[in-house]
Structure formats: C-alpha cells, structure tokens
Image (cartoon, rainbow, N blue to C red; front, side, top):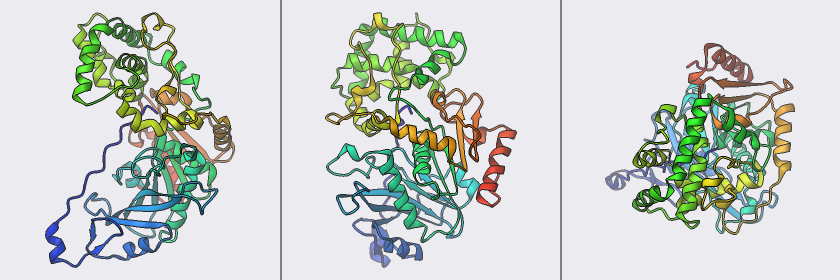
Length: 444
C-alpha cells in the first residue's frame, strides 16, 4: 500500500462547567469525565486487560455510546507474563445483540467513522489500532515483535474479551494494509469472526514483488503510460532548476531529509506512477514534458511523493516499511529508462526508509502460509479490488476451493468500494453476506 497519511484524532472539547454542575465518573488515567456511568461503561471497565476507558460520545451520530479504550497486551504473546504495552481501540455501541464490525487498522486508528459496511450491518463497531502505530507503541520499541502473528494475537485477545459483551455476528474488515490485517487475522484465527471483507488488500509474495512493477508497465493505455514516463524524465532532466523550488516548499512544511534532498526528490519521481495508479490521478492532469518548470513542480507537489522520503514521513511510516521488508512485501523500481538521468540514486530500494538500526530479514514463510491458507481454507471472505489500483497487481487468486468471493470494480483505484459495484456485483456480495451471517443485511 502506498503509505496513507492517517488523520489525527480530533481532540474532544472538555466542558469545564459540567465538572461543577454534574457528578462525573472519571475514566481511568484520563482527563475525560464519564458523566453518566452506563451499563456498557461498567462492563468495559471490568474486562480483563482494559486499563483505560474514555467517553467519546459526540464524535459520531451513528452510535448510542462510544468509547476510546486502552487494552493491555503482551509485547510477545508467546510470553504472556513478560513485557506489556497498551493498545488502543474504539468502540461504537448500539445494541448488544446486533452485529459487530471489527475494523482492523493497518496503521494508527482515528475513531469509528462508520462507513458503508457499518451501515450495511447496522450494528456496533470496534476499530483496533495496529501495534507500533499511533498510541499503541511499546517503549522501548523492539521491532522484532512487530509481526503478522503478534498482530493477529492482539486482535484475538480483544475480540475474545468483547465477545463476553456482544453476542451477535462478527465481521472483520479493513482497507489496504488494514485489509491485509483482516486477512492475516482470518488465517490465524479463522473462527473468531463470521465473515471478512478485505478492501484493496494486496497479497505480496516477495520482499519486492515484481508483479507491482509489471502492472505499472502494462496497465492503462500506451499513451497514458508514455505520458507518465515523459513527465518523470522531464522532472529528472530539470532537477537542478526544480530542487530550489522543492526545497522552499519543504522548508515551509519543516521537512528535513537525512538522505539528502536530491535523493529524496529522485525517489519521489520514481514513486510517481505508483501513486498515480493507486489514487487515480487523471491523465489529463499530467503536464506535458515541455511544460514550464513551475507546472512540473506544481503537479509533482500535488501528488506529494516527496513526503514519504522526508525524515518526518519516514518516522510516520517506518513501522509499515519494517513489516513490508520483513514479512508482508513491497515493490521496487525499474530504472531502465531513468538510469542515465539519476544523479543521487543509483540502486533504489525502499529499504532506505526502514527504521534505522532495525534488523531487516525477510521471512517468506509468513506470506507462503497466508497465501496457502487463503486459497485452501479461508471461508466467508469477500475480496474487493480496484481494477486500476497498483495494488490490484498482487490481488488474491482464488482456486474455487473456499467459500469466498472476489469482486474487481471496473475503472476503480485504491478507493474501490461496495457503492461502486455493478448491479450483479452487489447481488453477489449481499447474497453471500446474507448466507454467511444467517441474516438479511441492509442494501445500500
């Protein structure tokens, strides 16, 4: 997944007057009062592992009650009595017996925003922040415990605890890296949920999967591919003129570059087609190769690939890069047509933005297990992809050996959703969800 910048959770306003006028029950170790201690609040506080509960009612109109919860987890689930860290999840509650949508984040969580699948299920939502992201970061960071299996163990612990409260059906779902997280959870704990909906979740089979680069070289029409390449070459040819303009913008945003701005700039140029296809940039928006330098820079800045190679971008996404290069895979760049123009980058690899000092050893057995399990054993899974999304290049390949479906949305990119399905695709999706859950889901 092209790295997706997570929006910060909005701070909640604290009404000081309420502290004096209303008796308040305070959640553990937080400054947010729970003004009316509800049955659910008491249930959450009593769950083993729950160390903090914060009332977030008012964040969403979709739920009767909502909470931010910190849950204590073993750093290493193989040694449950060892070091611990706190993992954040959000709970949106409507009814104890209605379905629970388990949102499996791949990055930091930003609350329960609902969405199409929550409306389809019409129940509750639990969104779990991925370990080592957001507020769910152990101290000190020990990278060797950021694994697919440890993350699945985290989810299993939270789901097991919450199932003592919620008796309805459970559906896990995530998008992009969060979709991968949902699939990994399915592989290790196939009975924990009744169905899984994985949006735009790649299943990479190498540390740098060549299928992604092959997609870049073959997707779309020849005219668009040529226009992309010509734009990249123009950016490299005019690098000396463009760098001062790029530097000015970076300084305004307080970005720094340990690798050097020229190297970061060139990486951003190489990254451009991946961002183009993932996010659906319009071919008409690409400047001509002979456009003024200012036009080239304007478009380069809009796509914003430079940020990923800044120190700030690296810090934000380094847990993902660690996972990518140790287990879940990523991609590299074919520089055949650019080699003569590159000045600062000679042998590009996104290994350069993995965490400093972390031991990077790729474990192919993880994705080999995942791929085999998904093909032969994972039932009640819906895979959703965008036809023009770069990450559809490593989409799951089904053999017809499982009770699962795959839907590829025509002309869609990384934002492929159920709402964009054709009539036939919607019927396929809804009928299978009805059958898997033993209930009639809402049609959208």
